[in-house]
Structure formats: C-alpha cells, structure tokens
Length: 370
Image (cartoon, rainbow, N blue to C red):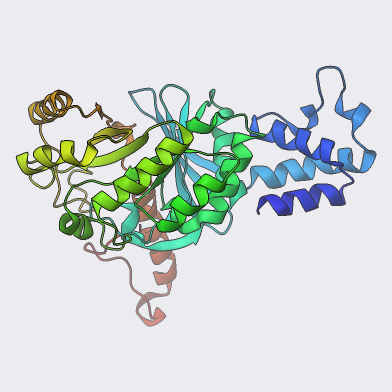
C-alpha cells in the first residue's frame, strides 16, 4: 500500500481532505483512528457516518502493514523489532536510544556489502511507503520518536520513490524535523538529483567505509562506481544547500580500513567539507558461520588512537557503536537467526513423506537465507 492507495481508500469512505489529514496524522502519531478529532471536536461530530463506520477496518488494515513478531531489548536502551509485513516477509526495525528509530526500506539488499548480513539474501522485495511509515508507528506506540534514520535493511536509493514518499509523509503529517530524517545511501546519482527537489529535505548519510576506490569496490561490489572523492563532492554540495552536515559512515574492519594509510588520507578527503565522520566498529555474529566471518572490529585502543589522530587533523569524528549489539544489532542479523529455525521447520514439514517425497531435510552445512 502506498500513500495514493490510502488517499483513495479514505475518499471512497467519504473523507474530505481535512478528515484525511487528521486520520493520517493520528495514525503516524501512534494514536487510535477513532481519536483523530481535535481536542474541541470529536470524530463523531466532524466525520461523516460512512467514514466513521469504516475506521475500524481501515485501522486493522494499517496495523497489518507492520506486525511485530518479537521484540529484543538491548542493554544500551535500544530494542530490535522483528517485523512481519504483507506477503510473508520479515524486516527489522530498531528503536534507538535518545528517541530515534532505524527503519528498513527493502527486504534484503542488492548491494551485497561483504560485511553485511542483509546483503547475503539479495533483494527479495521493496517495502512500500506506508510499510516504512508503519515501522515508525510501531515505534511510537512504544516510546517517543523524534528522529528516523533510513539505515536498516536495504539500500534506500534502490527503492527511491517509496522512500521519498515516506520521508515526505513523516516530515509533514508525522511531525519529524527535516534534518532528523536521515537518508543513508552507498551513493547513487539519482539521490543527489532528487533530494534537493523535495519539500522535505532530509539529512544525508554516505556509506563510504574507505578512501580507496579499489577497496570500496571490493567491499561494496554492487554499489555505483563513484570514487570516494566524487561521493564527498556530491554530498558536500547537498550539505551546503540544506545547511546541515553530511554524515559519513565508516564500518571499522580490523586490518582492512583502520590502517595508517587510511588515517593519513581521511583528512585530505574531508578538507573543507561540511561533514561528520561516524566510525562504526564492526558488529560480528561470533561463531554463527554467517556474514562477516572474515571480518573483525579493531580493538578499543586502536579506535581511540584513530579518533585522537583525526580530531587533531580537523576531522569531526564520532564513534557510533551499532545499537543493540547484545541482541544481534548488525543489520539483518536478527532476521537471519529467525529464518534459520523457520527454514528448518518448512523443510522438515515438506520431508514428512519420507524417502519418496522428493525433498530432503536441512543438512548441517546448509546456509540460512538472509
């Protein structure tokens, strides 16, 4: 379901634009649709009868866009939600400390970053604009939300129309400040063309991870072939237009992008740029045989050395530990673990017929989807 579908549904129920906007605002705030009236005017006083009678079914259909299957609180104040969406697919939504939420824009991802669990499955389906917004609704039913980051499962640029529609919705009816809507991307020319044209201009985060074009192409094999210098130039132009800095994401991988060569190159890349560098220590699933077997995070002492060096050389640097590391905090990890028993269950059911059934149970070495 997209926003146009919801508008048509409400029009069919007899809603005028003022009714439609009140209902959408109530939904995005996590309130019951029956409470969509103002403090002085109740729904029964201002909504036509046909609309009032259709609110219960509409609320049920909106609730079905994102159904929380399980909730996993983290020790850092975060909580990772495993969410069912229509069509039998699962995504992840993360409630962040300090009133933020991280949403997914795709089931799976086509970029295939080597250190990311989500990329293991490839792209399975797009998440609609209202399914994206529904993740925020679920978050708001649990705690206040003042910031939404598009850094969950998927590459937002590969689902651009739906993501931009969700950003428009959240930045208007959803009441989220524009710079607190953060669009994260590995870099796609369409992003830098479309974002400046929006009424709601979000913050921008670039998944860079290295100053070396060859290493970036290895780590992000299906990302657009834009060099780090080109990406920084495009990001800089957008940052200057909207008036808030770009966030440069750098997943720290021990022995790969934490060396002295990178440290010396980063200040040159950032020189004169309106940007913040976020160092994100790699979040591994130890012993699971899943994504990231070949990667490890640098030790704490090395991370401190990097921050000190970069700060001395004029680069505003922050360490951003992945929220919920004690509850499979890396993108796609919770879904991958949930898929393992689910896949085994499906295969076991198929194999009930015995040797003649034409199928086999999962062997110990089978990789889990996701």
